[in-house]
Length: 473
Image 1 (cartoon, one colour):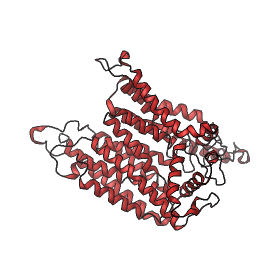
Image 2 (cartoon, helix red, strand yellow; image 1 turned 45 degrees about the horizontal axis):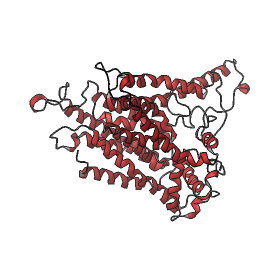
Image 3 (cartoon, rainbow, N blue to C red; image 1 turned 135 degrees about the vertical axis):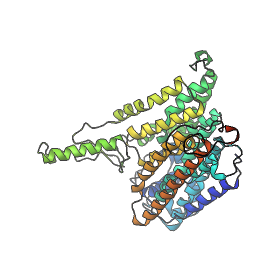
Image 4 (tube, rainbow, N blue to C red; image 1 turned 45 degrees about the vertical axis):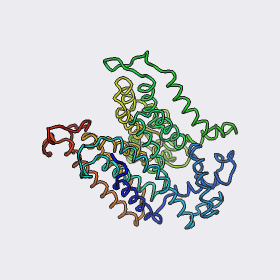
């Protein structure tokens, strides 16, 4: 693919201009969260960053993200220095809003670059002049114009595009067989936001099996004698170096226990304040139904039922009313069991970088379904990487359409104000219609042998690696 094609530039500029239209839209408490973090990192010494609690929105991201906020604060002071005062809670002057909104759009440049690299990795149909029939074009639209990212980052307010830029760039490097670069990018990502631990097992197993072991037996099984200690040391050096740069100053200051207590506050509820649609949401519903039924049948005394919520965004105790309360260790065991088959598959029968990508998706979905205090926005961790497979495989495209439609719809409650209702409805409709239309057309061109599709290309050949599989679209 000629990534300098004008359509990629047009898509990137167009979506960036669209983001600017949302500057004065609704913004969530995450806007104040990040303003407070700007103030903390700019105004206070490092030793107080993870102790400061003037605001309820305390710093709870890994140190590398704190350094990122410190860097942003150097630019923020030229817009409005008052936003950098810790005591100015809920401060949102026009220059402050402008700066924070612009900072998300600007840092999305990394995401745009990562999409460009991912588009280089997909296989193109030779001789195609219609841009709509090019997998790279469809992929660019699915990623750059992703409905979930647009509303979560540029209305609700977060920096997910910046973070997903590291993830997609890391995936692209592995698809390009540049494994050390991919490992470095993922190590940086983990030190920016620890939610990406969800997919760390996929990285660990894949790199150990397919990078540290250099050869397989004829039947595809592992050749133990091909293990390369030097490659393992190279990976260890990368991870250690990144963690040392991120955590080193806090370790030297004796702050590591405090940092870790902020990163893993297990006294938060089993579910987030707005329930992610996972197994624990169903568990909570069953518990509440049983409690209500028990009270009505006079089997339970309402006054004796627990009052603490099993959800929340702040630190609090929790317990269920009827069913056994779920502890973090239970969710960890369930999560590990759910991702074990995928990890075992790429260990015993590696299928290259795309096998790794599938394992990453399954790890993301397993963690979403069974993890502790899962945010509803975590579904994007599966949707975005799946876009790559969706443009190459008819079967994966079908899965993508189901997951994006349901996953994006589950994000609707994030924007609950009347003014944003037509925005979220129109954006999702446009993205969904494009996804169905473009993927249907793309796979009819790539898989002409399937019933109801167009005739084979001259010579009767299919594009190499087109990933045609039977499945509904």
